[in-house]
Length: 203
Image (cartoon, rainbow, N blue to C red; front, side, top):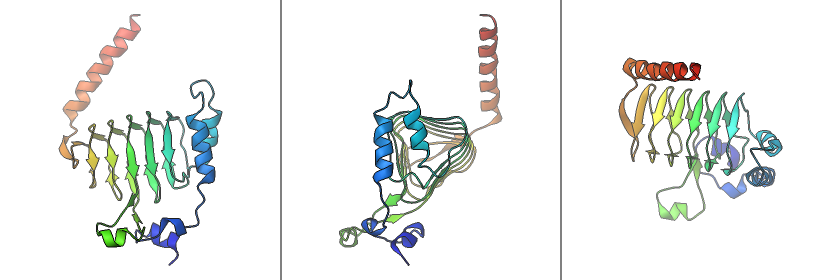
């Protein structure tokens, strides 16, 4: 197997032997981060071209960092606040209606626990998947190989090391399920929305 094949298979590989050039990605990321984002979106439009796919309603707030871009897919109605970092050595797939708070980090790359093997500069990479209707709080770290389900809230400061199922609130280090998202939650927030709508109508 080639180094690239080993990487996408989740096996040990040498990152400097994958023959992937980072120059285009780094140039576009640098230009975006230095842009007058709220007045001129041209740098964002150029940055979007390096990603595997970008849905409608895409908002990315600088600064932002990724390694390659071509392994990242964004769904519709995506929003990321400042300092999103994605180490996309393997695939990162993000669904529809996903909100990321400041300082979220998504890592697909990891290193061997054994120091002797790690010191050969070898690493592994496993894909990360985030489902639809997900809100990730500030300073959350999502580790290699993790899948976060649909309709999930990840609490601030969490370190997500294992898969998170659908329809839950999860938090902590390591991140664990706190409780299910229930019909009571839905009714409460629908009432809050109704109050908001009525207040807006009165103005």
